[in-house]
Each structure stands twice: as C-alpha cells, then as structure tokens.
Length: 336
Ligand code: KDO
Image 1 (cartoon, rainbow, N blue to C red):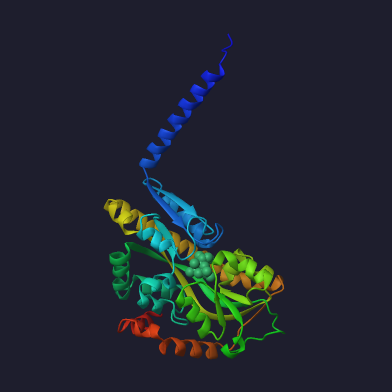
Image 2 (tube, rainbow, N blue to C red):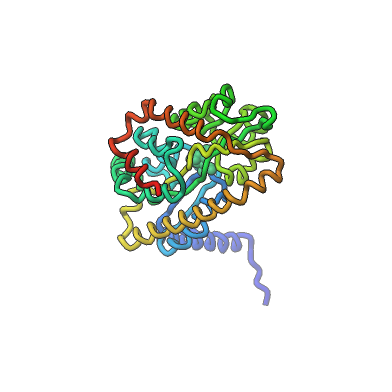
C-alpha cells in the first residue's frame, strides 16, 4: 500500500516535527545553564582549545558552553560590560580591560612584573588577589575563575633586522606599534619607546599586510596562530610582558549554581587553564625554529635596557599611584 501524502498533509507533519524538536530543544536548553563566551581569540588558540576540549566536557552535565571566537559575538574590550548587563555569561578577560574599570588592575599589566606562568598562578591564588577579585564581583558582577597563560609578549615588526635593529627602547622611536585599545596597553607601547596605535586584534593582520602599522606585540603562539609571521620580518624577543588573561563568568550565573556545580565549574576552569598553560609553554619553545624557517629574524635585544626603561616608566606613572600599598612587594615575594 502506498501512502499518498498531500502537500498540506506533509506541511502539517513537518510543522509538528519542527515544533516537537523546538520544544525538545528548549527542554534541553532549560536542562543546562547557558554559558556564552565571547573572545577575540581564534578557535585554534590554545586557550580556546583548552576550553572546548577540557572545560566544556567537564561541565556538560549542567552547563551548555557556547564559545564565540574571533570576536564574533562582542567586540574585543566590550565583553565585561556585556556580562555586567546580563547579555553574556563568560569572557577571557584581560587585566588591561579590568584596569579600564579599576585602575589598580594596572599592576598586573605592568611590563616586567610577572616573571613566568607559575608566578602568575601564585599571584592569582594568593590572598593579595582577594581585594581585586572582590571588587570586580561587587562592582561589576563578574567572578574571576582562574588565570590563563597567554605568553611572553615580544615586538614583532614588518622591518627586517637590517632595516631596524632593535636593541633598546630608543630604537623603537617613531615605530607605529599596534597595541590593543585600552589605555594600559597604550601606555605599555609608549614605555617600550614606540608610538602606539590602538586597534582590535581581529584587524591586526590586515593592518600589518597593508603597512598601516609597523608592527604589533604578542607571544610567539599568537604570531603563529594569527599568521602574523606571513606579514612581518622580525621579532625582537623583549619578553616585555608575561601576559595573562582571566577566565571570567557572570557572578549572578555562578552564584545561582548549587555548591557542587560551582566546585565542578571551578575545577573545570582550573583544569582547562592548566592544559592551555602547558601547551602554550611548549609552543613558546617550539615556535622559534618554525618562525626562523618562515624567514623571520628572532633575536634578543638589550633586555636590561628594556626592563629598566619600562619599569621606570610605570613607577613614575599615575598608574602606580593607584596600586594598593604592599601589593607590588607581595607580587615580587611570590616570584619563585
Ligand atoms: C591582543 O589584542 O593583542 C591580545 O593579545 C590582548 C589579550 O588580552 C587578548 O585579548 C588577546 O589579544 C586575544 O585573546 C587574542 O589572542
């Protein structure tokens, strides 16, 4: 027997099926807490890989992790406000972005303060961090879950070394160096001796390719992941900032979870941060050879000159006057 389905009948069946799926979808959605994360990072960046491979599976029993990479949901630097307004649940925040709201966070953005990845973890987990975390929660409604290792930032230029050999900050005078938008980043660019240009991360490749900027600063894994090496010719290994991000979540969402789910989410965040940290550190070692094979010149400048110039700039700046008493001493004590 053949069943003749009229067009109207098919439409009715299709509609019923769609409604059922939709309701089922909503039912599934209601069974999990929606965790939308927006970040300018790409989906192949080690922080993204760690979140999708480690964090998401570890919380999937009660939370639906929905990453939006390449700043596809919110523009870089607008995520924290989106979380505060209830339009986003998570971000990979930076101390520089937090310093826009709370100037004292600039202590974690200062060049040559954090020594290495382990030092970042020691500082984040020390009681010295409590006042900072509490202020972000009380005044912005954002809970800082864990610290993520971004890597040692270096000066990456279009110039060949023959055209510009960078030994001291004086050699960067007049160099149009792209830095991220917030004031703390612009200050770092000036402290390095350059003329900083504010620009979103997602625009940097095109700006380098066109010559709109002379260079940018990021860790080696980012130079590779974002393919900046295709449009630049040298990296002066300044290590001017051992850079970090904070995995941030809406305090309202986090505090609405039962304690066991809060602990599971915290453990998942720490596990993802550790996995990403290990991969990023390994890449920093491996990528020097890769970048040299691509024709870039990598070399160490006069690090004493860069360190003393940058540290002096911060200590003489208005930023340092916002640093709570004793915090810098405690950060230095925590360096292994
Ligand atoms: C950048 O814009 O250079 C930066 O490295 C700043 C970081 O805080 C972070 O936002 C990062 O971009 C993105 O995650 C892309 O890697």
